[in-house]
Length: 312
Image 1: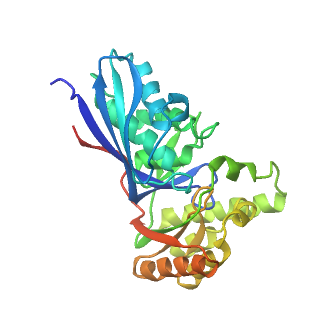
Image 2: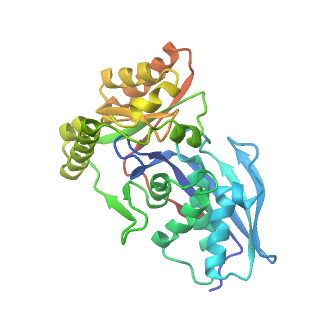
Image 3: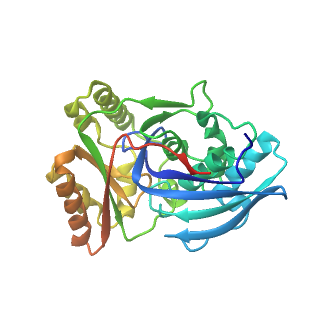
């Protein structure tokens, strides 16, 4: 059976870092998603087609567009004798801390892969999507890319024998994300970080990370709550997000186990028991509102699925 001429793939948003896992932990967030349609062309290369959704325009150059760069990397590796036109329907906002650039890159490689005569295994698409992310941030952070591609909660260690590891998820919890009406470029968020940290902070941070991961593995909500506290990165970035202090405090008062920046922000996320999700979401929106910032709230299960082909 010959491969199709047109394929559409979806890819979810993602929560980078998950608070305590800077650049190593990522969580798929299925409440928002990008769709990319790849159409086979006779002429080689990757070019941009229509752009729609929450973004009106995207760069047409491959080195500045994560979807195009990812697609080109895959086509080059496969030695494809054809090119593609990518039409992007953006459902994940950019500069929001929700992996908007990663979602486009991942959806693109999943769609283009389905056009190949010998498609790669799903997990093998990770390095090509990561290369696409380089158009947004260099070096490219792997956490959003891996979570978006694989789904659920992932640990990323590029350059190792197992660059992505799926992690166990606790039962009975959901993720709530609140996106304020603001933008924060990933480059600016990374530029705010100091190159060194006191030993006491590193010890406290690694202890929180260990507690969080142990809590996920043991389905222990108490351990998760003890560990989901970012003492390393959040204090350096929180001031860049107006209303963060009020919104995060309100989430905790409403019953969240933990609340922190999603990626570099300005969106914030909270893990909470499913019955408390509506209260936590409303509290976060109200907290931003106290500072004069409007915000929208979304919720998704922790086991949100990764990217997939939805039509061919």
